[in-house]
Picture: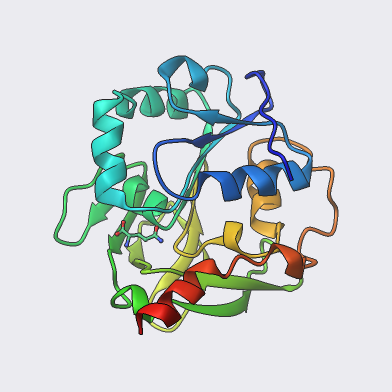
Length: 225
Ligand code: GLN
């Protein structure tokens, strides 16, 4: 699928285009029929309804946010109502407490621990029911993922696993420690679009399209082992 980008108008979801899984999020938004844009310059954020901070490497992303002078820009647009979804490294950037590290954006009251499952080789796939998001099981892909250890009283837990929280939200911020953009399932993207006040074209977003399952990271893990 070719990804075409739209000029920013209200109703657009932006994907932060600094590092990490940018393209995969754009493709999911396209499949949902939601207008989207890659965002990188301060002016790109004007009028965005929502921003996705993709997974990647949080230390690298934090440095790039500084170099591109985007931290203040994101905080300003968040306070005017732009919603933000952080996947994995994106969730780390949004937390106000990071074990052994400095927080970056501090927009959601939660404590998160980086690389909490181990190394890249300890990455895994699973599935779970997230009642607020979908009536169907949602496939989950964890890649050198963090664990959310605890959340504040204004944060709703969307998915609790054994000893950690995997998805949570407050009024403006959604966080997932897994990667919905690497599965064929659109349910989390649909949920975020609705949170942004948009109307996704796709109704049954939890019907997994196997053709879209992205397992390249698993192949790499097998080669390395
Ligand atoms: N381990 C990465 C970090 O700490 C996050 C990995 C990911 O986004 N898949 O930033």
